[in-house]
Length: 308
Length: 327
Image (cartoon, rainbow over all chains, first blue to last red; front, side, top):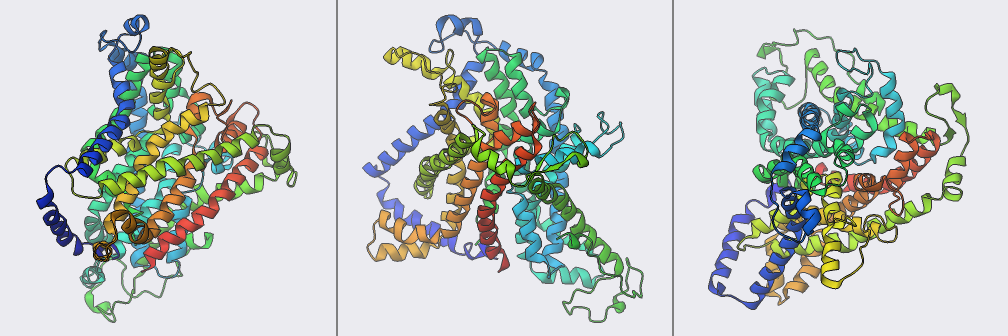
């Protein structure tokens, strides 16, 4: 509702700025300065990642002798060694086992809650939204002790968790991610759903659709763009989580790759080229998501904030 | 709150089967009133109840229990009956006889102030510069927010390649250019907080830029035009017209920055587990709870202090967001 006010405006304004700019396409000192500043800042911004990439391709023996400011000694060995010695395949698999269900369950439950809050409940609407949204911002450390205790005392069959409890199980990590991320997603989706014309649902209702059918067939397909944006965001957030895995997993071989990185530091000792290769490999999934789904990522990050 | 998760009201004397109701069964078809059968009520209760139960049970309940535990002494291993009630002793201890606490508080504060003064301002500045049609605008934007997709733990590693005492780029460069002695950027307790803040700010800037870019796009262009017609220059237009129109986004940025400063954890934990100049409240809580000397009550008291600070800003945030949502 609130965002729609800007849409009719934008094409016209774009046209206006374009038209205003055409006559002064010549290089003005202001423009040059602007681009120089932006190029300089952008290079500085890109440098740390670039540096890690460059070093990841260099031989340790070469840089140890000639220093990092030298050239040469390029190799792919660091990657194969990081992959094997760091046992990265195992950790990547763990990340996958945690991230995919966490994202899917969060989106499913959040869209359900948002649907009810936006179309089927009026009494507790705002209170519930506040409860959901605020939960997303609490410091995770503030939940740690009771959660730890709760997790250790909830038994699970051994085929789900080799530890026999929710503690030290992937399921436990998935659950806490779902609980934490539900708030933000529910809020964003309920805003989106509120903006849908009620006549759509009414039509479905007259056709005898049950509540779940209204959700499944009418509301959910319309939410696809929001869901895509949120999914992109959630994948990076869950994949990047460090704290929960650190606090709620105890077996090293269950760690997701972001948290396992810390152990790699020990395994790789002080070979910084190897460490660079490991870091780049760990960053790769998020960077791929970033480059392929940039539009969704940006949309997601600003979804919650651009309301009003 | 808990009452809500159990809220399916007693089933009404339903006349038809819940699933397939003939159209004639409705009293007023398109009346717009929400009259659902029993099956639908159960569906609604489940659709809201399950997510609500997760949020209440795994987030709010533990948060409340933490508050209670902060008034006790407990090793965390024994049963609930081994919990000893100690009143506000943990809080008194934190402020009086726990040496890392004061540095942690002030480090968190420095973290906040630095994030506000450099990356937030820079992010806003970049957003203002990039909020126009320009060649390469999208490329600049992507580069500035690329660090946002990296985890802070990973950022700690990437910057180690620059900061490392013996193998880092910075020291190699300083030795090469100025023959300076090596500096232990992440190890020196007088320096490391600021070195870490450069890395954290590197990420924060892009995030803030994105938020402001979104905010600026939503500012009514006619406002700017009116200001331009009145003869205001770009700076005046920004300070007097655009910035005030950004109030909601400013609030979000304030809250995001405070919460980020308070929750900062991964990067210091990766570097040295939050010791020796990098004390942060979040790291103290963690080491008190999952460290060797598991002091649950004391760690909880520290966590409650975090909670109290964040609650103020969470309330501001939720109020801002919901004001937008109510309409």
